[in-house]
Length: 446
Image (tube, rainbow, N blue to C red; front, side, top):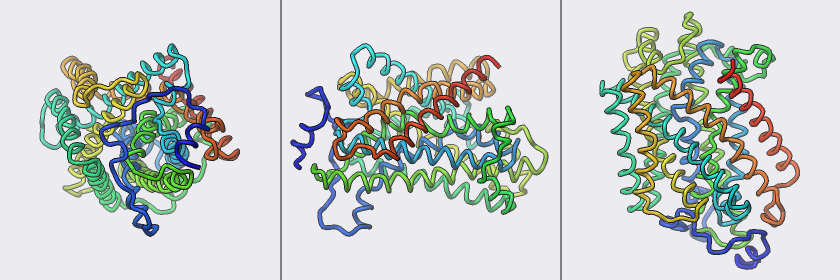
């Protein structure tokens, strides 16, 4: 079946939809007659842009709190969260490849205008909250590493706008290369931290086994839900469905099936790396803080100050802050890109990328600077937690449409979710919704 016949057979209604990320759409060739590993390399990249959202500064506070207070027990929650993420990102990539639409465009195509405006506004709030967490994380890292005042650090994070523009002009592969380099920096830093911390192997492995106390202990459940809410990021579902379309795969059923396969391998491997980073943060917190009686370490600055004296390794705090800076800058790049996708997709509106990115960054920078001036670093910590609650509130409004679209045979044709994927995805969506409702109620009313 040809691309034209395939699209005509699918239930997408609106015509004249712009290409997602038009300036880099289909810009990376996929040569024919390549071996498996060379073809996998050609498709590799989008998964790493997605993975950085799963190890952003918003995750750090929940992972630190979980490890310092409850040891290795919540490693199972990190594992479960990443399995959820792998499934949802597979669906996101499949939607983008099969339909030629990102998730925002798919919503615009399917829902009435009033619903799309509501979803767009909610998505913009989500991007602002996401951007806020990343700006705060970068500012804290700059303060810890170079003693740059927090307010100045917030302003410096706006430089990612210039980085994005410069790298996209050179080619999308350059942007992916920067992201992968920063991801590897984080991995190396926390790999060394684990070596320094010397965690006990058997208690660590036991942490991956489900423990009933996670449900029965309200404090543990609260942090567990926080880990889930900070791990599965709604903006990644919009982002992934767009960036997979940078590959120039064949527009046939066979070509799209191959693209879905390799894109899934790419994102699954990248998310495994994100799993390692999140687990490493919790493991280090458990091995360094929990075993030494420091059970209330949830602030990033406090962890930074304690690592070197407790481990007796001069580089421990430096590596921790360096990983935080890499995480924050990486996430600001992909978060800003997701903001462009959301605005253009929901509104079918094309504005200059530099203008869109400046708008996104300013919306996050202004409240961060105000909080720094009024409340200092403590206020930033509270703002970071609030941003994660806002993200939790938005998550289901991205997950349910994604599962609905990819489970609709009229829209996906031969690529529709098989029953086991469909029901697994709806189960994940319902679990996420219920847990996030629980988190929001406890945050505001407990």
